[in-house]
Length: 115
Length: 113
Image (cartoon, rainbow over all chains, first blue to last red):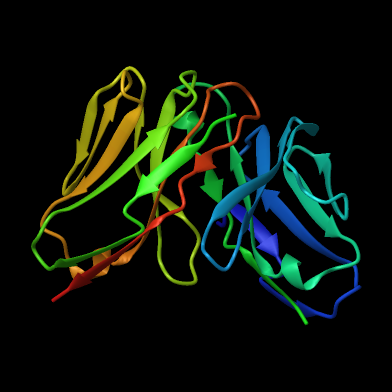
């Protein structure tokens, strides 16, 4: 039973292409996130959704467009891919509030390589 | 917004030694401070966390301390083992709905036997 699952795990594509990464969580959480981990291992927040509503949109190029069809899914679409988009993209989820529900759970990551 | 600084960036210890990683945060409204361990090619996984109403928490060989006044928190690993080798991240966040974890830049811990 994978709590946060994302597909594909590996993606190699050419510059200029458009690609999507899908994410689903079965934890019943209200909040989902996309994080980007670059080659230096830095984990940077990109987007946050709470109950399908966009909460956080960090300084991410508008080529990146998240979409949340329901609170269990948060997909990431990337247009006109550039070399600098090569990274690992992690989907995550959490339940807002206090106690153990504050924990953020990560998916296994999607390794995107733009050539 | 929140900014989290983490030191050192790399740490090498001998098996059995202790390891300490330190972080500072900037947002006084942050109230949740987790630590994640990331092994090569894997996802970050929570190893311990602490909330702002607690000063110290321990779980077997790992412990975390929090100084809210100084906005410092630290991870302590005792009796290190080779399998502790990984990248460790500290993070901070507020409790409001939708707020994200803001991560430090990570510490690569190497434990040699």
